[in-house]
Image 1: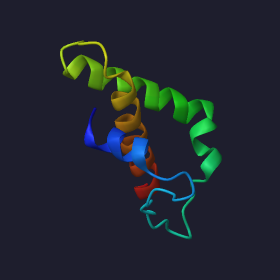
Image 2: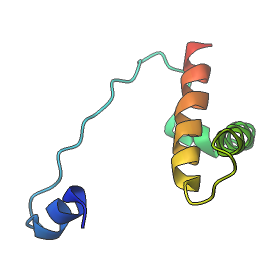
Image 3: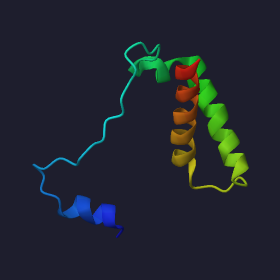
Image 4: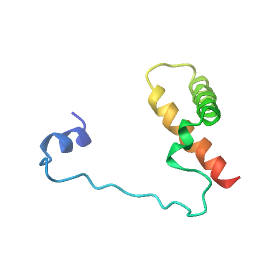
Length: 80
């Protein structure tokens, strides 16, 4: 069992995990629903597939690819 899994297994139920909040620009065009936009979803899907191909099409890291793609696409949209 990895250390994070051990921490979750022994952590009391009433003690939440510490969560780091990222600062969000108040004038940001993006909202929580932005990722539900079909166009943004498609951009993330394409980027995730590119990451999959870059890793040699090895399976098992689809969630990692998706989350990285989300981060990159949303970052690009924020800076635009």
